[in-house]
Amino acid sequence: MGFTKFAAAMGALLALTTAVQAEGYPDRPIQLVVPWGAGGGTDAVGRILGAEIQKELGVPVNVVNRTGGSGVVGHSAIANAKPDGYTIGIMTIEIDMMHWQGLTELTYKDYDILAIVNADPGGLMVSSDSGYDSVEALLEAIKTEPKGTFKASGTGQGGIWHVGLAGWLLSENLPADQVTFVPSQGAAPGLTDMVAGGVDIVPSSLAEGLAMIEANRVTPLATMSAERQDAFPDVPTLAETTGSDWTVAVWRSVVAPDGLPDDVKTKLETAVEVAYNSDEYQTFMNDRGFGLRWAAGQDATKIVADDDAAFGEVMKKAGLAK
Image (cartoon, rainbow, N blue to C red; front, side, top):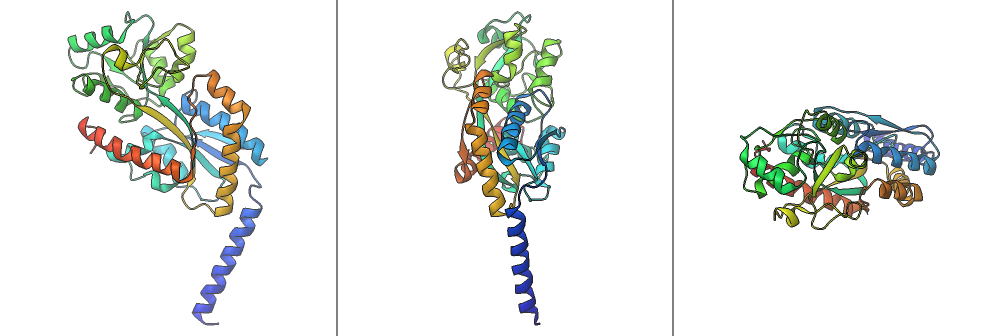
């Protein structure tokens, strides 16, 4: 057999093998990687989605928290896995930031983006015993005290809430580093640190602080959205309070390593859509104040790509890009 015929035969065999594998997919547990710590917003979204995807596919979907490196560790674990459908994950908006910082060469192009399933505006939260009951009072103190007096946390260095804070400070004609940012593995440890007195501000989504807000341990001062959030109708926007036009929101998406077989990708896309539309997911998200957002396929990829370019510009202005 000549080389050309041999290559053609091997190609046909590989295609047949892939098709057979896809037809039997899934026949074993699936791992769902969450790049942030247990108890945070991404972990919560990942676990409810995993439970619903499990129902649809009929095999266990095991959630694994892979933290570290300001999100690089978990996102790398997803991207570097075999593209066979048995490793999926929650890709967060930090994928559009990490490479600008020089932390990794990973970008959204290293994934098959199955769908965006959530979006939440940023917010400003303080400990309830902080003495601040308005953004105006907090901002005046930040302006008055020496640079670095106030500390904030809620994500990794250069992550979405770090950029959210820097963007707000810049909009108020303050240096982006007027408030010192303390990296954490997500909003949950950031909030815990704030309540314990370690930091003063957490600029994450209000949904991530809901439990502590309801327990009167955390006070939400403002939302970084154009309009008030339905889940937090009493919390004003930055525009209403200080006049800032700064807005920012985080999205979360379900992804797999780039290169999924078409049949496997279709099954996963369908399972994610069914999970998103389930009563359990919709109720969970609404009860906890998380924003619902659906975009799949090319629409989802375009949103991620547009944000990548936009955040690159903001991070350069804030001195957070390499």
